[in-house]
Image 1: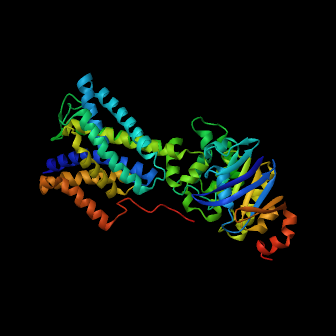
Image 2: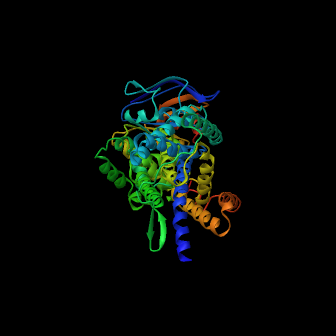
Image 3: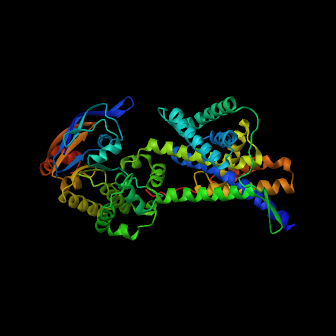
Length: 237
Length: 291
């Protein structure tokens, strides 16, 4: 599904990512764990087209999309749930979901959007109750649900999630990860960046460890969870 | 007594409508860029002067004004593409400064191409005044109020109902998030300049029968619209209407009861008072954000 090959990127003269390579197979759930500032967000921003990489390739189903705009990435089935949720605060819940399907509603209207919105509401019944409220007034957990729902409205084949647990109560984090597992079971490939390594390794099949802009380890999640260095550095054990 | 008040009321709502249109132009660009576009007033002048030129050529007021508005919208789009879009790292201060340069260039071009003489054309109706319940009303004032209302209604529907309008609101709320869902954010900035030019050109085309139009009025229109935008609350579309009408009425009543010498001073006094007392304007408020 996704193949990242020797990707480097940065901001101005500061380079953040150094020749990152990773893979997400079709239907696979992969997590990317690392400390704050390790480059997780920068990597996902590159994948979503918000940041131009300085070199390297990003292959999605065999097509190199490194030079494509953010809106073109959606056509390749890649959608980002950004760090900090980033819902459209002054707009209603319904409008946020419509915006998620923007490419399917403008310039031509895809009639299946309504049904997809119903599917999002079935997954997150709380959002249906708050249909006409401004997104900025939702709780943190509800905003995270909305951010995921908005991403689903583009019918992604690869969902990129950046710190979905950030700032949420433990119970809400459990709910969000249950949803992520369910989406993966429905066939959506997942790339999940998390500081909460424990939760991330439990829900993903394969894990990468990123430190100072480089991939330092990769393995099946279960064996990463037993790796002594990972345990001390990221699991706090 | 009451007829005087009614007359002032109509006149105030008439000028207030013009200010509301200009303020709306300021606010739309502010929403999409966070900057004040000081070329806004020049588009009002262009709307009036090009309408006059086309009226002289075609003798058809409706056609002349409609064509002029289209031309100014294209000028607004061209301004954004030539001056704002190429900025490598746009920030609000840079865009504001560049827009002042754009205003000066636009004014010079208008002077060179369309001349220094004030121009005008007759009102949209054959009859120039109507007497309604003992109050004499200029028919052009009614045109101004009606066309402004229609424009505001169309804008409201555009922003609330159409996907493109929603995309503009989304990009104003969060540029990155808008890019993630597939909105081309640079295109929304261009579109906001087109809307601002539309509002300005419409104001110029409908006010010219009452005031004439000349190349050097842009700054005054700009500052009046800016004051109205500040009064109503920068970035708020209903605020533009409230601020514009309030300013128009203050001017009408102020110049009648105090002195017409103070007409222009009223706008600036209001601007200063607002900046001191309530910088977010009458309808302005911090956006709802919960993190």
